[in-house]
Every structure is written in structure tokens, then in C-alpha cells.
Length: 340
Image (tube, rainbow, N blue to C red; front, side, top):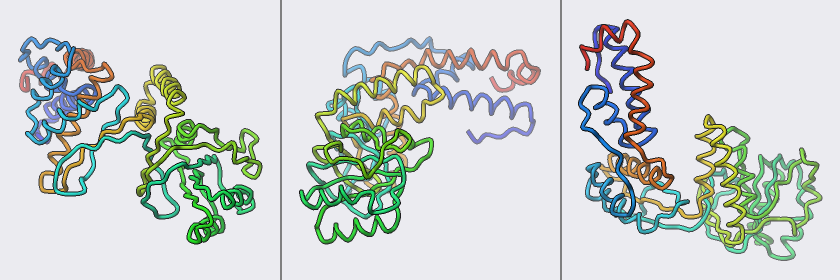
């Protein structure tokens, strides 16, 4: 990738080739090298591999020449894989590599109070707005105190006065309320909607004419249990699975209609996957290379599960695009023989 040429023409062609190679590889793992072989006339007559069984996936993974540790983790994960599994990499809690399989929906949120705890039978309040005064939540907090309820509150923000009141009562064990902020930015603007779907409730929004002070505890959402850990919250709610499935289908349809939103919508759909498979690896000298290999393996498995694994087809598509763009230009025709 870092190769340099003294002549601007050669450098321009080389950079273009590398850009197309990377784009092809990101579009479908394995297609980058096929693109280069096709471009340079080293085509080995690649054909798409038909994937019918687990053994076919194992064969593809082993073709990538991963380390034995990575290969073992990837193959092991296939036993827990489902069509909606969310795969991710994280640091292990010890010096061993292992797989963690967890049932639940995961979201990135900002905690307003520090916590790391697993809680059960939890109420959920989603507010698409800023909580300015305690009076807005007073009736709900009073009910929480009476019933000794536990509640997650997701907002766009809240005043120091409101946060202080919640913290004092949490410390006194009057109730247990865990406030989180979800930023109003392109990546997170709809996270609050997704959490509401998972918990089986609606978002309280002033734009819809809702008032926080008029919200009834009966209208709040509910999750069976959740793990609060730093800026990640993982929820489990079996009663909302059908609603989440419909919601995911709607997002998928939107993605098909608006592919330019791929990054945002794909991220939302991953958060709404009920099965989470974590590849846990120790933070040792091999952490970077191991995580890179795992990332490639995850992309392969994800594309196979989503029926988009077609490296030969993708490579040919990018080759056609490259040739259509450059073959008739003066720079390409003069310099290509020096590179290809």
C-alpha cells in the first residue's frame, strides 16, 4: 500500500489500483486479491464456491491462512451462529482466548451515573428530549419509591438538579433509577427508538404532543434483565422478539431503498440482533494481528450468513468499473504496461 513512484503518472495509476483493491475487499472479503489477479492477467479461473454446509464455511476460513488460535475461535463460533448473530471482538478477562455467547440486544449509550451491574425485571422510560426539572419526573419517581422499582431512563440529557435527585435516592436505596444519555447525532438519533422497540414501549416526545409529567408507569417498557457495563448496555426481552423482527425488516427494506445509509442502518440492525458472539482475546503482543485476522473472519462469516459472499462476482464488478473509468484515459494507456 505504501509503494511510491517517482513519476506522477505511475503513482496516480498505482494509487487508483490500490483504492479499487481496498474497496473490493471491503465490499466482500477475498475479492481484493481476485481483483488484482484479474487486472494483471494472472486470473486462475476462479469460480464462486457453493456454500451448502458448515464444512464449506470451514474450508473458506482455512483458505485464509489464519493463525491456529484464530482459526479455532472462528470454527467454534459456527456452532453458535444464527442468521441474526452479532459478532464482535473484545479483550478477554484473563490471558486466554475464548468465545462468549450472550442472548440480548446491545446498545452504545452514555451513562450519567457510574455502574457495572446486572439487573432484572426492569422498567424502561425513553424520552426524546431534555429533562429540565425534577417535577417532570416526580410522579414516576414517587411510584418507583412506593414499588421499589428499578428503571432505566434514556434521554437526550438532564439537568444537574434532576441527576442529583436520582443519585441521592439511589444511594438511599429509595429506588433504583439508571439514567443514560443518547446523543442527538446521525449515528445515535434513532437508538432511542430501537431501545423503545426492544422494551415494548413508545418514545415520549414533545413533537408528538407527549409530556413527561403525563407519562403513566403502565406505559413504560420492560426488559427481563440487562447488563450495564460502562458505555454498553445489553438487554434481554423475549416478549418483544416479534416486534424487533418486524422493526429489523423495516430497516432492511429502507437500506435496500437507500444504500447510502448503509453504515448507519447496518449498525442499527446489528444492535437489534438477539444473539451476540464475542471473540475474547488477551491484550498481549499479538493482540493487534489477532484482532485483524478475527475482523477478516467476522466479515467472511457475516457476508456468508447474509448471502452476500461472492468474491469473484464482486472482483469482476470492480474490475469493470476500474476499466470503464481509466482504460480510455491517456495516463492509463501510457503507464499501465509499466505496472501490469
